[in-house]
Image (cartoon, rainbow, N blue to C red; front, side):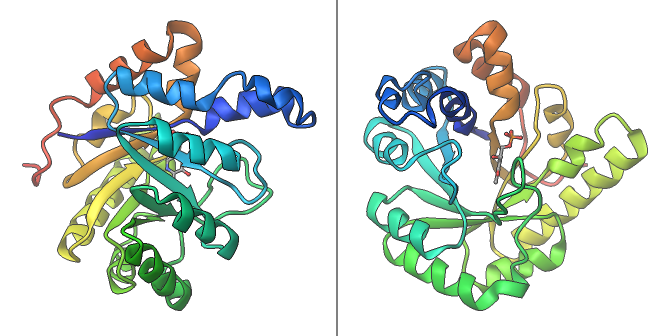
Length: 254
Ligand code: PXP
């Protein structure tokens, strides 16, 4: 079964928009990403994803600690390969860490990791996290060379960046090109012995063609779910997405 990890950063973004500059009022924690995570679990999601950015623009340290204590599915801790955040991961012990590139100016994670270009430091981080019992995923663009590099540094998973596919969804030729890249990358990841997740920019509409990508374990989805939740509520939004993902067959496609 294709699993759904819900990225609840966007709930924290709404909270921080009001309370960031007033730490005292932050105790009102409205909307609370932990409460949102529990609703997502009640609706049937398989995991919760949260990104503690170095600038703490949405998720803050105590959210990660509270999520670890409260949720009963898996905690996927998205983070940069930075010493400060690695130390937090080693303390909090999420089930899995997804390492992402991080730039202060970006609105969201814009590109995948250059694994080959940072192999020594990534290998060391994977070793330390694995040593604490934490699985490691690397967020990568759908390029076969990145899959080999991810396996070489010892990661267990890759998360294929679906942002370009999502951005080109309404342009038939470009969309098909991006789908082919995702399919080839998933095959390369599997051949390299990696498990395969995917995410970024996925919606109920564009997830339909993601069924063509083989070997997927989990999709990590945030923005479209939280946007939809404004109109129909979080639980309904999650159930709609689970419905759109149902029937996924992981094997090679005919
Ligand atoms: N996966 C990763 C690695 C991400 O950085 C993000 C965005 O925070 C997502 C998945 C979810 O993307 P979206 O919010 O566009 O669904």
